[in-house]
Every structure is written in C-alpha cells, then in structure tokens.
Image (cartoon, rainbow, N blue to C red):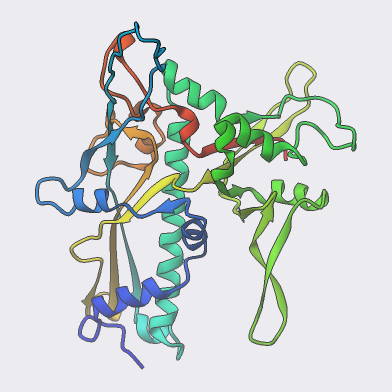
Length: 361
C-alpha cells in the first residue's frame, strides 16, 4: 500500500488523481455550459506581468438607427464601443494534519482514493462558496445601470398573497415562476438559461407540485438511486442547502417566513479557469511531535468571472480577494466604455444570462 509520508508522496501523481475524482457540481455546471473556459483569461494570467488582476477588452455591438436612403440625406457613420472587464484570481489554501496518518486513517483502505476523495470534495465546496459570494456581490451592485441588472434579473415572489387558479401559493415557486423569471431577465434570450441551483426546501415544493424529478443512476448492485440533480422546465437543477436563505420575522401582521434564493445560470454565465499554484500539493513529515505526524498542504488559484460584469477591485486588501470582498457590491459593475455622464455606455443587461428567484419555498 502507498505510504503517506514525505518520502513516498508524489505531488504530481496525487494532483492528477484528485482531478480524476468526480466533481458533481462543477461537472454539471460545465456540462450545462454555464462555466466555460476562456483562452483570453488563461493567456492573461500566464504572462509574467499579470498574475492576480487584469482587464480584458470587450467589443460592443453595432448600434444606431438606420438613415433614410432617399437621395438627399447624408449617410453619417458611427463607431463601435470598446468596453473593459476586470477579472481577478482568487487563491485559497488549506492544510490537514494527522497523527500516524497512513495507518490510523487509511486503515487498509487505498490511500490515494481515500484522501483524494476528501480533498476533491473539500475544494468543490470551497469553489461553490466562491461562486455564491460572487453572485451575492453582483446582485449588490449600485448605480443606475447596475441597478437595471439587479432589478430585472431578480424575480421576487415572497410578498405575493393568495393562490393561483390551481391552488398553488403565489409566494412560492410554481409552474410559471422559472419561465417568468428568465423572460424578465433576458427577454427573447431566455432560451440561453441552462441550469438552476436551489435549496432542498424549494426542490421539495416543486416535487410536491410534480414539477421536479430527480435524475437516477444504477449502482453496482443494480439498484436505482436518486442523484441530487433533477430537471425543472427542461433545465438541470442542482439541489444544495448552501443556497442563501433568510429568516424573516413577523412584521405588521405578515407571518414569519423564510426567504430562499434560487440562482438560474445560462450558457457562458461564467468564465472559469484553473490558473494553478506553483506547488498545489505537498507533504511535510514531523517525526517528533505526537510520536510522528504528517501534514498535507493544498493550494489553488482560480478565476470565476461573470460574463458582462467587471470586477473593479475598489475594496480589496491583498492580492487575492476574500469571499467577503467578492460579495461586496462596490467591487462589481456592468462592463462599460469608461465614459462619464451621457458618454458612459454599458453592456445591455439582457445579454447576461444570470438571474435569481426569491421565494418562500
């Protein structure tokens, strides 16, 4: 059996093994194309001059009204706008220490599989937290044009009273909720939405309405089991209780309730790149302390960049943003041409396939 100590640990082999462990959430986001690779971002952070933050140009679309071609109207020209999008690398690190790790923890179980499974799952949760922090940040943006995005891409049914014609509570998700939210956010581009991430309380409500069905797989014993993945209105759904929720106390006769946030992402909603660290994994052996112990160190540097939204780095203390800084609305803005006043132009918010539904279940 492979020994878990500094002498026999192979960081390259271990890293490759971790990468082969199925990463359910990220894989589904990749398959839905909500996360897509970006050669521009990869190239930007592969250079020797830009390693933590950079700006990428975005080209605007043709605009302006067509002129009347009548033989007497001059044809005047306009030019396209160039926007800038700020992108940032977030770095995270963690270490785990165990006494006599190889014998006490693996207990005859294959070391590579046992440890890699846990490390892969750990980093999956960390990346999920970063994604949720970014989503919180972009929905906390301020300023006129930014608020156009926040308002139109938020579908809040928590204050709706009564029931629909089928007896479904209007303050909870129902048959038309997702479709209405996508249309409000992106209009005719609503077909770009591909994946929904929701709390289990919301998923349970959809199950009760027979609007949600879990996908299944067959295990090694031939038994069918539910995955934590399903479909709603043709969109893949990830069920995750790390989705935001808020306990709202009774107010003015309105009963206390819980507000749940459900995120809806479309194709190309985020650019995703694993920038990498110089030493992603390494082992340290301390033969003296506690009779001998091993420490596994892990590091990662990645980019999650929402399409059409720029990270402005207005409040960031170090070279890597914390989750709190990523959730700070002042650090985000719709990409714009850097103009002032009437000359300032931003991307059309309907081109950004990101939306949220807020409901009581």
